Structure formats: C-alpha cells, structure tokens
Length: 360
Ligand SMILES: [Zn+2]
Ligand SMILES: [Zn+2]
Image (cartoon, rainbow, N blue to C red; front, top):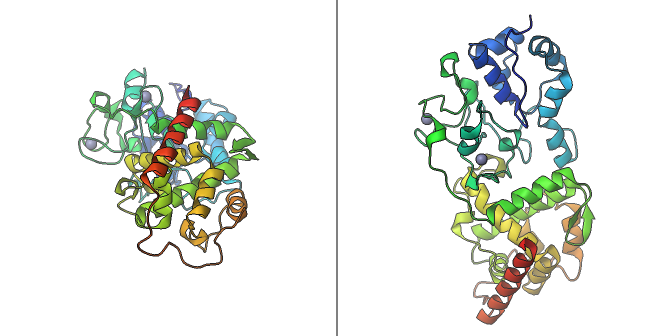
C-alpha cells in the first residue's frame, strides 16, 4: 500500500539516506520500514547505496510512488562501473567507493558527511558523493568531511537511528548532534584532486598530460600514483622517495597510513594527505616525473607491486626512454646522495609557478 506521507529523493541524495529519512517520516525505524517493503531481505547487511537490484525495485516503487529510474540514478553502481570500466561484483570492495566494512547491521566506517551542509538542510540528508573515496572535503564550506562521531568516535550509521530520532544529523549511538561541531578548515590545495576527479567522471576523454585518456584510464593512473606515493613514504631512504622530494612532493610519515589498509578503508585525514601529494605529481606532469625517475635510476619495480601490472597509460610512460626495468633492484644503493639544494630549489620554484598559473 502506498505511503500516506510521500518522501521525494533530494538532489544528489544517497539511497541509504533516503530510505532512512523515509522511515523516520513515516514514524518508524528504518529496519521496520525495509522489513515491510522487502520481507525476508536484509537490506542493511549490504551496501544499499551501490544499488537496489531490479527485482527488488517493484515493491519500493509501488509504496514510495517514485519511478524506478530515479532510484537507478541515485545508485552509485553506474558511476563506479564507469570508473572501473567493467561490471562490479555484488560482494567485495569496489575501487574508489568507501567500504562500509559491514557486519550484520554494524559498520566500521565508509560514510562521511559535512556537518555544515547538514546544518543548512531543511531536512538533513546524506549526499551520494560522500561515499566516494576521493571526496575528502566540502567545496561549499571549505572543511574536511567528518567520518566518525566526534563525541564517541562511532562510525556514521544513520540507518541505525530509530523513529524517535526524527532527523539524520546525529550519532546513532550517543545522539550527539553533528550540526554543532567545529569542523577542520581545508587548505585550498586539498580539494583540487577531488574537483578534478569529479570533472573526469563527467568528461570522456580527458587529458592526462598531453594524452587523451578515458575516465577509467585516468582513475587507474591515479590509483597507480597513490601506490607510488605510499611506497615512497614507506621507504624514505629510497631513490623513489629522494626523487619525489627533489620535485617538491612531500614524502613524509603523514602519507603513510598507520594501518596500511586499502585506500577505500582509510580515514578521511589520511586519504586527504595522499590525494594532495598525488595532485602535486599531476601538477608537475607525468612525463616530467617519469623523466626524473629515469635520471635518478628509480627501478620500475620500486614503483609498483610486480605482480600487478601498471595501467596501459603508465606502462607507455615507463617504457619511454631508458627505463630500468630489467634490474630487479628496487632502490639505489645506500649512501646515494640526494640532489643538490640548488636543484631542489629550482624544481620547487617550477612547481610553484605551474601551480600559480593553473589556479589563476
Ligand atoms: Zn558542506
Ligand atoms: Zn557518537
């Protein structure tokens, strides 16, 4: 039977946000609402933001009065498959989508929000983009997204709210209202990767240096670069780390996630630091960075796990010129001297100039 109180999907709203809001609006718990729509289907044990399978859509359309295409557009599957370039499986982590780490209805993380956006909303709701792993800040408010309750450190789990809670901008464990928290301001540099990646998702082809690449190739190259930055931080005395530092790219402990987890499982602060470093690599230009790797005899095996071949666009850059692919050494011998201070200053000045041009 259709609901008496219609709840439209809001602009860029995630499916889990809408389901939770719809339940609270009908005066019931999210679990009770979904149990009534789909008896026997435990929707909250899966990542409902990814999609609602077509076979499950009919009762939802009937009760909510919202046409099926709106639910399909709100699902993240389409964007994620475009990024990855192939159909994604039901289970397992999807590259570039934050992983919920779901265990029954409980989560380990994977949901972010901007408390200032929630504060502005007439009815607080969660945006689709807050589930994407390259989203680390709010461009409207210039603050770092929040990925855990600042009062009790619990992950953000709106689906565990109950009917009495009435709105989504609160912790489901301690009921702290997030609209009252002080947010971390963002450096202007931090959002550049995020905004560029958003554009890449919409445009195809896109330029990576002077090469036209597809959305899938661009994200694959960015994943590769994330791996390079993480490896350089893990081995600070390596030729790779020396080279990145000589180009003005900070390779420090702060880029080394303490847990060593995959990117999609990292907290927002760690993802933000990694993406800022990757954006600097992109600012300098991949051709120039790979040229510096060759100059400093950085071995190809130092850049990536040899069991995982690099994406095609990176492979072509690695094979240009005299790449050191044959030698299995992964770094220069100990005692290798970093570049002179003058060379470092010159590279840094070039980088700053380029960044100024791009932002002006
Ligand atoms: Zn915001
Ligand atoms: Zn809390």
